Amino acid sequence: MLINFLNSFQISRQSIFIYKYTLCLSISFLLLISFTGCSSSKKFTDEDYNYNSTTKFKSLNIKVLLDDKPESKNITLGSTVVLSSVDKRIAIVNEGNTLYVNIEGDKVIINIGDNSFTSESFKIETKERNVFLSYNKKSYRGAIKFFSNGSKLIIVNELPLEDYLKGVLPLEMPIGKGNENNEALKAMAVAARTYSFKKMNKNNKTFDVYLDVRDQVYGGVAAEKALTNKIIDETRGLILTYEDNPAQVFYSASCGGHTENSKNVFGKYDIPYLEGVKDGDEPYCSIMPNFEWTEEYTEGKFLAMLLKAGEIKNINYTIDDMEIESRFISGRVNELKISLESDENDDKEIILKGNSIRSIIRRTNGGILRSTMIEIEMDDDDIVFNGKGNGHGVGLCQWGTLSLSHEGTDFKEILSHYFRGTEIKPISYDK
Image (cartoon, rainbow, N blue to C red; front, top):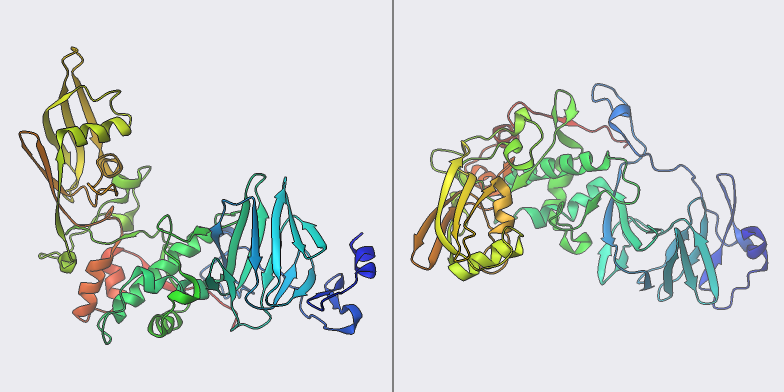
């Protein structure tokens, strides 16, 4: 059907060139352009990756979710692109043209002018590496892909892992002045690469990572800096391993003086290299602005947060007492007991546990509580939380990493401090 369509296709504005493919050989339509190469990207699993081998991989691409809300999207091209379906290149579409993308069930439909194409997925990519794609006024390396999950149009940026990291590192670690942050940047590059690599090995159907704090903040080409690009190149392919397997990596802004055991935050089981460690006699991360902080609440505001979290059914209570029942070794709260009195003879005791406290008792500006490394004061109608640090505290402490870098600590030593027992090893790449 497609071949018949191609044979009858008429080009009106010379903005789209259509191609026929036989097997993996590109045959130019109307003798305009011939494409070469037909090997597909390999998706890796833990089973087919062996760190002790000399295996070379043909590609190592990561898929970043750019959008999953629209059922349709109009995309005006900022550069000339190659449009491909699942198994073949379809057209070259010139800069300035608009792609009208929508879904119908599990199919994606792309309309360009009077021409319509239907496939399980499509992708667009530029013909030259240093020419970038544009989406929502941001530029991206690699390809942009379109999928359907049956109810939403899924828009994904697929690109080489190293290129992705260039759009991540400047947003996850300050560049600093001179070379003072270089070792911190190298440590963060290895940690971010390891995190990403683990995500890529979960057999995800459409995407591997989000572009925000749900995974790592990714800003595309506009976020890149010359220094951080250089750092990515210098650490190319290096990841953290434990017993020859990729390590599970977490990081947070400031551990408050002691990192946290992963089990206390994420549950399930202990991970030896993610046990909490003391972050210096004088916390390395104390250089963070607002390392110590305070949140103040009225009784009414505090009860409203408990109501919103479903801990109580109404706010017809007064807070009789609030005390920390237990702490983890790090100093973070394990159990927080809140005693409530009611005129309706419905007194309650609520126990809030671990890191979940941060999403129930939020900051006064509505954001998640910065840390559970807190002390509590109660004075009449006022409740005061005095805390330290920012984040869950598991794994690498970013401000602590910066402090160690300022002291001249090598990035390998920094990673060894936060991930005890791990080793840095390379992923094997094709050159």
